[in-house]
Length: 535
Image (cartoon, rainbow, N blue to C red):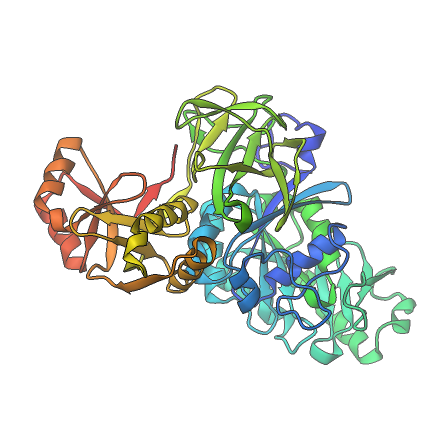
């Protein structure tokens, strides 16, 4: 296995076998279905669920919120750990819907690679492009899976060209589809010279593999119709001439992506993709932090919180902090220092996730994602160490693009509403601002669907009907600068000032003109659209 930094020491075997990755795509490209099949092959579930379950078909395991089940979309990132052919996969399923992109951005800080899922008929869509840009900023290696090849899809070369042109990345085929739509019978595995045939009858069955000696092998005729053999030979020859060969180092550096073709719902092409993640995906990588970088092979345990999920189990009002371990060998019952508060924390009940199921984690290694149940001590961006004062950097918080006032349906329950909103703010599900003037709260989100999710969760989890009403403000900016200048600025603009759940000063704006005016009249103060979430 090649490593991104050639002079780094070898990792301990337990850490070296970790593969921590996220699945990214546009909504409806088949991301959740692919996740289900990963779990099926990893032996984690007996029968894969369907996003929209009918009758006997089981519900998906990775969509655990009531709203996700009702709508058939993922609105929350969920983590899953399972073993597959000697590797330990830590998979994070992200929301595809653009209204939840902030959750996805933060998730990408906690993984070492991304699997990009593309719909064979639609190619590269807008949300895929956005998420790809985030991966590019972090130089994440990307492996591509072109899904839904059993439906009418584009020409293979067109799909590859579109990825190369739109995303400016070299594409190398790891497999090549044979036929498409109704005529799709399987793929030729270009890396191992194998024929992979799809079984349309049983969706939970692993595809049949036939070893062949090149495309001139007479055995090919027994499995592939004559008209498709000629086309396959011609296309593969062209692909080998025109497209770059697979360079594992280039994949690790994020300059090249291997592409596999298949049909997740028919369990086809998934196993080859998983083998590819094991072979070409990166081992746990160093983590950027202040005042120094954290290397995975260090013996001391460090980890950081990239997500907080409240009420995963509504009966227990619990809050689980998702922690990515950056270094060391963690054991249950360890005492770790919570860097922000400088207080020790005994981690007595860490959990490993299989979506909504969880089991007690006796141990975990760098690269793993564990859940730490807590009552509000841990928030996004917090770092846990064995005593050293390190702060993991690079976890963003974005200024919301939509603002609405939020009031409790019952005025007597205002205090309960404050508690619920603060909980969601710490979870990162929304920004909550308390204006200096007036009562009530202003809730800010990236996309309109988040208001719906928030309203339904407050009602379901807290029994509190709420009303969202239009606000006079359209956006919010964090105020930064010397303390005395910020205080003077706040005093002069009281009607626009609010505080977020961390107590930081926020300037609420109506128009772009407001922002321009501040830049002109208060040159010592800067208005920021992003805030680093750090302990």
